[in-house]
Length: 554
Image (cartoon, rainbow, N blue to C red; front, side, top):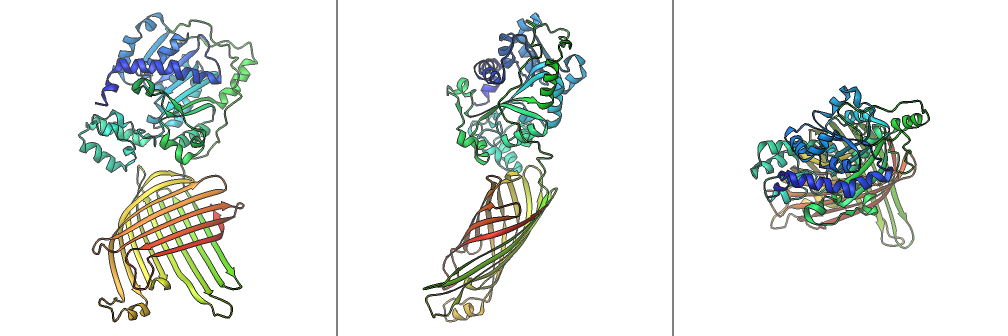
């Protein structure tokens, strides 16, 4: 079974030691050498296989973990270092280290390997680490991005099938729990996997967190193939391509591991002051932890590479309101004449868990085949929609939507759709959303008199009104590709449940380019397919538009 690897603690210890020796330490040293006598803290050390590699490099080490059984195994594996006084393994919460004055401003390096994705109060963690680091100290973090194939840690499942099934952790929480229960996973394991789902971390969220916590990224590396796979599967590690790494919307789905070295900005300033003040005494080693060689005297050079992550006031907040006014047109004269105009207003409001949107649009066009021929109406429709969403926990939302359409060329005086349902947001960030919707569709049509009259002699004449009951499935995607360009797409499928020959498919694509803070150009393409349209009506409608958009936002 797949879970066997994680239950073989000796092998797990050995692999953690090897990956640290071969990959973690060389990565850390990209931002500065690891000096003999360096003081290393690992939070969530388990059996301390990572710390063994640092001990062999001449460091002194402290490991903390809340799992006593795994710490006891670490004490067996590293009994010599414990007896020599170069290692301490503490069964406690990492926050309790602040209660020991001896540890404040003491450590040269803090390591969190496959830990940050399980932490709920991350701002408190970053604040604590800053207090534990000495001037010039660094933090190393490695974690699997949440949306990678096994970002939910489902490889620990006892089920052979689930432990090898990628991406199913991205299911809505109720569905995820149901699948785990259906495969007879133990309740404790299910709760552990659901806890990971609650705290899963994307690379973008991590970088926002780093900036808001006042840290600087010294080194970053994303892996397509995790270095740990070398020891588990015999597969060589592979660094993620720069093209994929630069695309926030894609990279987490195909990145198995992320490495980061960080340094608090405040600690950088303290390091400079410390280096310029030779009268300051070195921190004393905590009782019971001897040093093998003198530690750095605070002269660690401030890294000259890496980037400063932007400081975000509240990266998790999505509140705001926006009003967009769109207008566009087309005019041609000569051998063929045509005139087309489109206008729309789009309002969006988000407050905490509630979201409201409203849209109104008009499309109108006239055309003539040649000179002297009178123009005739070729496009005429009016549309409106209002929608309310309420966001539950775990990316799940309930919604209710009402839309109306009057379309001369679809033979409709009115098409009214009422759509309640559930939505699940796989990605729900500012400027980046991926979601799916499932719901009920009530469609009420009032047909134009000329369409009804034209069908009077047919074997099955049309009624003036018709009600359809259906299932609605929708997938939407929005991505702020850059500060100036935004892409959006939506695919909607409506299936009548009583008359299965009645089905509709709607596809919308849009690309918006910002001209300045208020105006942008939007190019849109809409494809509407009706499998069973009214007599004389084409199955497919295609509308393209180029609009000037004026945006008011708050």
